[in-house]
Amino acid sequence: MTTQIEKTLYDKFGYASFRMGQKEAIESVLNKQDTLVMLPTGTGKSLCYQLPAYLSEGTTLIVSPLLSLMQDQVESLRLRGEKKVVALNSLTSFSERRRIFAQINQYKFIYTSPEMLQNNQVIAALRRTNIELFVVDEAHCISHWGTDFRPDYLALANIRKKLGFPTT
Image 1 (tube, rainbow, N blue to C red):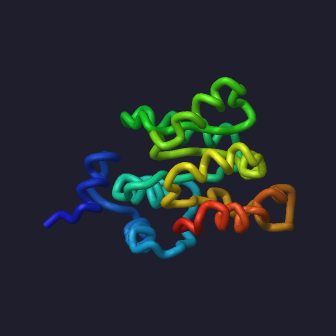
Image 2 (cartoon, helix red, strand yellow; image 1 turned 45 degrees about the horizontal axis):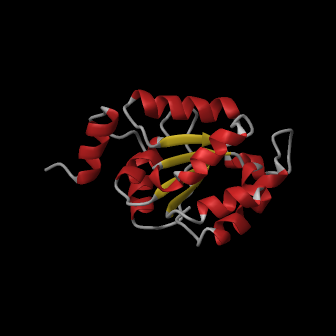
């Protein structure tokens, strides 16, 4: 018997089975438990939040540190037929940002940077939608060690609070 999780895995992503650790992480998220997923590069961490998003009513907000990674994720979802995905970052023009804010409730996936979440207009727009899942991608950027440190990652706990403590 195929569960809804396996059916969504196949229907949305074309996979017949999960890789090690994915199903447990997805079940944890679907049970509304804050979840830390540490998997090697290329082993499907994105699936651990994208699949639960399809089984949830609200919007998934993904905080990503790299514009190229953000664009790759958006394009990957679009290639699979997802139309309700957008990137909101420093490359987003003022007019495009206004359009996104006006249609904020239509998106299933919103990718943004930690720096954009310091903008009060962005937070005000996000508060007008149901952020059900708050994803912190590349969370190693919180570490003060090395060159990857991004101070705006330290503010994400406060942002999460402003958004009503969505599952993270």
